[in-house]
Image 1: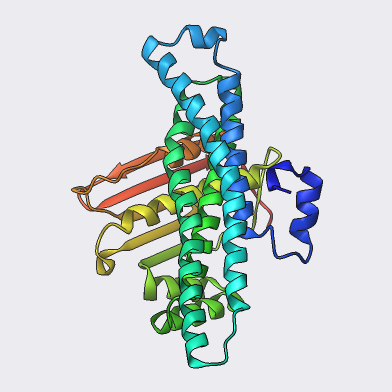
Image 2 (image 1 turned 30 degrees about the vertical axis):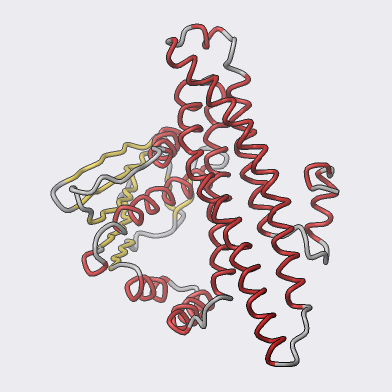
Length: 329
């Protein structure tokens, strides 16, 4: 039975069991399909409705095209679920090949390498297509039914999760193709960081392999996020997106010049969060704008004041929260 023919409960049952499939790859593809389906809902509540009639002819045509593209994307994402399963099973079959004589070992190694490369290309293609689909979501949020803007944002968050999951699957397959000697230190150090779960270990890891990072959190006491349900989740997403943006832009400059500074400080009635990163103003980074859209929406939801400053070398985003925090001291 194909995954798309399963009930939700059956898929979850198989996913949580001891079967070799479905796994992370098929699930990542499913999440991409969920993201595009949610975005398609925005189009369905817009096309041929009053809002649609008020759009320019150019935007009407673009929306119809993007809705058609969305349906095709969903169809392809579901197909990726099956493709990932087939690739995984092909790799497993290679492990069953005879491995006694030198000739058998050589043949097995070659077949395994070919199957692994194929298995690596499937999530890579999913990640690439999903990344390109961000532009579609951006249009739907900008011109679609305003009552469904949050659904479009959820679609973007789901798509981000699918992309990151697909990339993890690429790296796992890639790992089996190399001795990975040059990455063993990174892997071991990250394991240590995870086990220690300390800010100091995380900062040291980032500075060794990624960029120079400075984190300042004042000692003003413990705080509760205040006045609305899910404020903590909104805050987490907001902080995450700002830091992700900083990491993205700092990655385009030489490693020795990469600097990110994260500051969290407070006084009696407000809390200030800021992220400052070095960037190259001469490099144009292709972006969907989804990150900034998420930041703007969650900043408004949390009633905070945002400020962006740029100079020749640094880009700084600051958020000032008023009346959302109280000392829990």
